[in-house]
Image 1: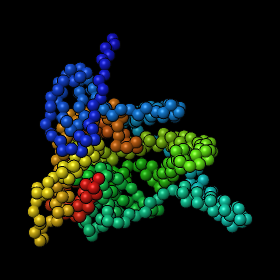
Image 2: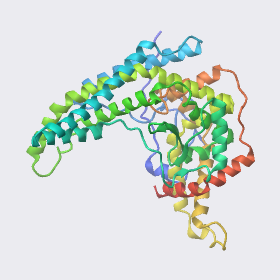
Image 3: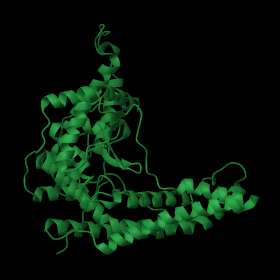
Length: 467
């Protein structure tokens, strides 16, 4: 039996002006223009219908250019295959079937990584040989080869330094909590903790020794409660023990090098719209497209092959990190963390709204001049920013949370392309036991960490307020 097709009204989105203006929080009931169901429309968020899912994804889909139809078809096939692999992995883990990565896939990925590293090494040796034994033209060619080696070399990273880095003497309470979480998941102590402006957190390793670097985005950290922060740490430290070979030195550096090679080889056509010497620039574009186009397509094919060989291991590692977060901070805290991570776009809008609200506040309402020893106006404005941002995120209605969850299921939405879709991560947590917290952040510990982060909160708040 077929379902009658209704005409689909145009999607509704918030305009930039509406996003930047102070918003009311009251819901305004209205009828769905598609099915007529009653919906509670909150003017701060996309208006949609839970019954027929009208306007579930208000952003229009990108239409590929006519000249890129073949590439778009290849992208669609690659995406469909990736979705099928993601679904199979979830079904295997949910059913308790072995979900390990095959030996052949790991060997094939390692072989590709070996080719990448050997290519760089061979190019370096060839360039040095030309510099030592060649004549002047060959030495110039050798110098060019060494320059390419510098551009194509694997990036191992460096230990971060600067005002965004916290050392153990500066933040003993934060490091103590991180060490407790690391011990619970079976990871070593963190080497460096830094903070930034992102609504995210990452765990990485830098240098040949693989020193661990934990990066905490303060906009995310500030909107989480104490146990959700423990869950965040548990997930990030889980990446140190979840067996994801893509984070290792051998395979991880090869993946990053391949992506960098492809980015360098991809023709961009920078000169097509130059004012002078247009013909020469267009001919240069044509030559570059012929020479580099085939190389870029080959590199893209290798990148996709490596992704196909390693994506199962990477997504399985994310599920494992989620399980470690639940074991460390409780299943409820891990669920709330994942739901908060889905609010990235809403946090961006809330940041713009708070920025506009604070900027439009009359000078008479900003308070008198502070007394000696009192917090500076900059500190007061920063604390007001974080307080308003927390209120904005806490005020996200259940209907918007539901929309984001359904949209993740429809569009296979994830935090980033290396992660499983968020709705599957939540579903897997829901299927598991409801675990209590193994690590608890006490109020005194949370207050000490807040005091250690205070200077960074002020600095990052001013960065965000500057827009």
